[in-house]
Image (cartoon, rainbow, N blue to C red):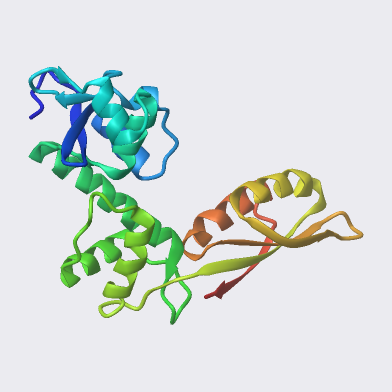
Length: 234
């Protein structure tokens, strides 16, 4: 178990009845499991595969070759990180579970709306519905797939659905060039044209729950002079 002086935890896997361990930094290891881009060098505490890290016993080259078909530390470490288990203290588990929960709630808030009104749903309301429904969070499962399952469960408590929003936007000519570059960064451009007066007419698709933030960004660029029509699509 991790002491206060340590900043690593054990990730391990069993292959053909034999256990293999690596020492990893907890935050970076879970970011990697979530699909974030993290370099292996930032995750590993040591470039060693252990038979028993607590006793300091290294796995032999022969056992690595037999279990993984290679002695390459990076290849083996990636397999353990992707398919193995990560040993956590209760404190680390609670902290990482809370971080995963916040990530799931944020994803739902950005991607879901009230199907009756098409309006985004506050994170506080989503969290309250999760608590009422007794929804748990799986530390080892990615946030996006859990979010889809959770929306289905809490839809019995509050009106909610995952959706996209199509924004039909018209931006004045003096800010249209800058605005177009920004729109390509914040959403998927579905179509657009430059009108005779130099203004820009464009459609972008965004997560439905993000429409308020996106419209505010557009109006900030357009100095409040953009025309925006919102259509929520399933």
